[in-house]
Length: 204
Length: 204
DNA sequence: TTGCAAAACGGGGTGGCCCTCCATATCGTA
DNA sequence: TACGATATGGAGGGCCACCCCGTTTTGCAA
Image (cartoon, rainbow over all chains, first blue to last red; front, side, top):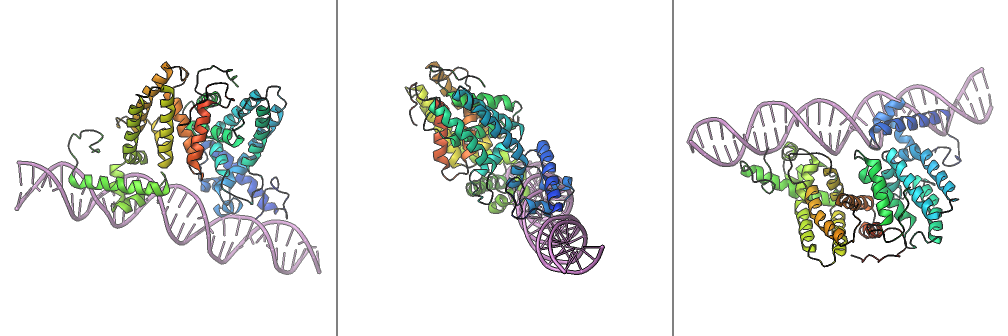
């Protein structure tokens, strides 16, 4: 089964028509998801793309795969942000800022959060670099630095933090003031419910 | 539209056959939900209950209503737990314990978390005491006490905390070691990611 | 340029789901 | 017991995911 060239240097390159349809589907999916969320009808996406539903299913055997293709760019942007933040003099601040960015992206791309989370344990060995592992790797560095600066407990993993962020986004995704709430809850989770005897966490 | 007698002392009591079917449906739904989660097929539930699908829809005009009927007992148990904990000499501990109990219930009743969250803003005025408001009220007391004991920041609401708990459960719901992870993440969220310069939160 | 096998396509079928209509059956009461 | 109010459930409509397989397109090689 052929893959998007960005994923793996294809053993055999996709045929021209296949690639054309692939791109059309991803574009249509992005539109549909923006309108209707991650549960958008696959048939409608195919229709929008001017493609038979079978073609969509051939290119993307699961909804998850399609979501990953749609979100790849945004995930790459997130990874780039992480790379930038690695230079921040305050590693704790950098980590918090980045988690905030993850939350913001998740909120503005309905379904990203859920999508990333499922990727965590669907055990899909054929897909080398899922969105999930990309983000995990990007965040791991930031967490490692924060830990060295004593700004994060040693028993907290990057997986924990991402799960927390995704959980929050998932929870407030369809509330009216979702973004604001996500921000609040994330800050809350990072600093704990205790009254601030400790250094108050900077807002991001 | 008749209601379960537990909800409101019925203006006119349900007919015997109606009540019988109502109970059968709830029982069947509980089984199906335990097996397949909150997204269980309504038609299968009707089939299991030996009832036409129209009957199911007549008794429960939305999936949400059915879930609430199924979970009412458990929610009442949760509220009772809260009442017990109100006597705990350590209000901070009581609150944490109760949130842990909420998490455990949510995890062991797949879909409870999501169900409760949706109830938050579906604006269903006909249903007097939804699960959501029951739990919110129960938790509000515990939080108020914790706050007075300076064990919780004043800017944290019970809605925030429940959202956090539900978010976490939602996030780890279908992971193999979900319950353990939920526990970890909840503790993490309650104490914050910072290294413990402060009183370490007791495990619940 | 042309021929041809491999690759890709998509219409249409299957089966599932949610939900509604309405002719029929059941219940409670006078 | 008889009758009106109440409740029932099967059939059907609309939507969906997913697959089968006859047809078309592509790219390579002669």
